[in-house]
Amino acid sequence: MVRRIYSLTLLVNIGLMEEVLGLINEMSPFLLLGFLLAGLLHVFVPATFYNRYMSDVSFRSVLYAALFGIPLPLCSCGVLPTAMSLHREGASKGATVSFLIATPQTGVDSIFATYALMGLPFAILRPVTALFTSLMGGCLANVAVKDDSASRGDAKGPQSEEPRPATLWGKVCAVFKYGFVDMMQSIGRWLILGLVVAGLITVFVPDSFFMQFSDKPLVGMLLVLLCAIPMYLCATGSIPIAVALMLKGLSPGTALVLLMAGPAVNVASILVVKKVLGLKTLLVYLISIITGAIIFGLGIDYLLPREWFVPTMMSDCAHCGMQEGTDWFNVACSALLMALLVNAFIAKYMRKTSQPCPSCQSCAATTTASVPEEMPLENRYKIEGMRCIHCAKGVKRAIADIDGVEQVVVDLDNGTAVVKGRVSEAQVVAAVDSVGFKASRL
Image (tube, rainbow, N blue to C red; front, side):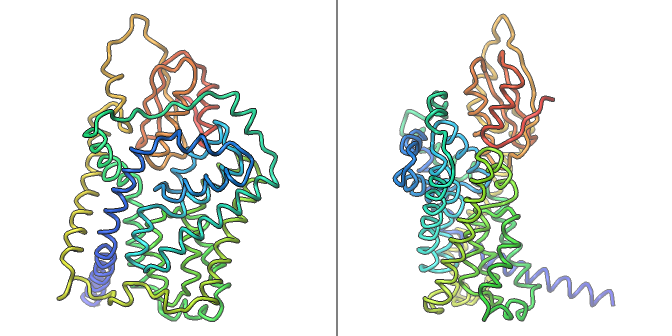
C-alpha cells in the first residue's frame, strides 16, 4: 500500500514537472523579449510623458491613458501607486480609471507570451479588449463621477522622478537591470505560481468538469469571474492557467475573461480604488472590467471560428515535454530565463541581508554621505499593501515629495519605510494614503 502511494505520488510529480517545463519552453523566448522591451520603455520613456496628457476631462485624455497603459508591464498591485500618483498630480478620474484598467490587463511581456502559448488571435484580441474596456470605464467615469483634478493639480507640484542615467552605456545597463532583475523580482514569483497552478489543473482537474460548461459559456464566464476577481493574478502568470483550463474544455471566450478580469482587479485594488477615488468610481471600474470581458468573451464564442483559438500547446502536443524533436533554442531560452530568475532572487536576498536599502540602489549615495552637524529626525513606518518594486517606488516618491524630507529608504521585503527629515507623522501617513497604501509609525 505504501509502495503504491509512493508510486502514484512520483507519477503525479513527474506529470506536473512535464507540464510546467512544457509551458516554460513555449513561453521563454517571448518572455525574454518582453522583459527587454519593458526595460526599454522604463528607461527611454520619461514619466512626465505620461502625465502631461491625462489632466483633461475628455475622451482624448481617456484614450491617451489607455494607449500609454497597454504596453506598460505593470501588474494590478504595481499599477496602483502609479495611477494614484497620476491622479494626485492632476490626471482626471476618467483617465485614471482608464489607466488602471488597461495597464494590468496586458503589457509587452504578456502580449508576446500570449502569442507563444495561445496564438496570434488571442495576442491581438487581448490588447484590443483592454483598449475597449479602459475606454468604456474612463468615459463612464467622466460622465458619472464629479472630478476634482483641476484643483488637485494646482495644489501639487511636479512629482519627483527617479534619476535616469546620462550616458548611453548607463542607459543600456539600466534597461537590463530593470528588465531582467527588477521586473523578474516583481512578477517572477507570480509567473512561477501561474505555471505551477496550470500544471496542477492539467494533472488533477478531470476533463469532464469544464466540459459541462461547453454549451453554456456565460455560466462558465461567471464562474471564472467569481474565482478570478478576488485573486491576485499578473497578466503573464494568468496565461498558463488559461491554457490549462482550455485544454480541460473551457471555451476560448471564457479563457479571455480570465485573461482580462484576473489581472485587472483583486481585493487590494478594489479597496484602494474605493478609498482614493470613491465608491462611484469603484463601481464604474468593476462594471467596465466585467462587462468588457464578457462582451468580448461572448463575441469569441459565438461570432468567431473556434479553430482560431486552439492553444499553441494543444496543436504542438502539450505532453511532448523534452522528448525527441524538442526545439533546442527554446530549451536554451528556458535555461537562460531560469538562470535570470535565480539571479534576480539571489540579488534580492543579498540586498536584504547586506545593504541598508534593499529596494533602491540610488539610496546608497545618501546612505554613505557625510552626516550633517544637526542630525535630521528619523522615523520608521510600517507600510501595508506593497507587493512589488513598483509599489515600493510609488511609496518612496510620494514621501519624497513632502517638504522637509531629506531621505527616504523603502524596504519592500520588510514592508517598512525610514524617513529622515523634519516632517510630521500625519504628513507621511497622508502621502502614503494618497497612492493607495497604509502607513503607521513603528
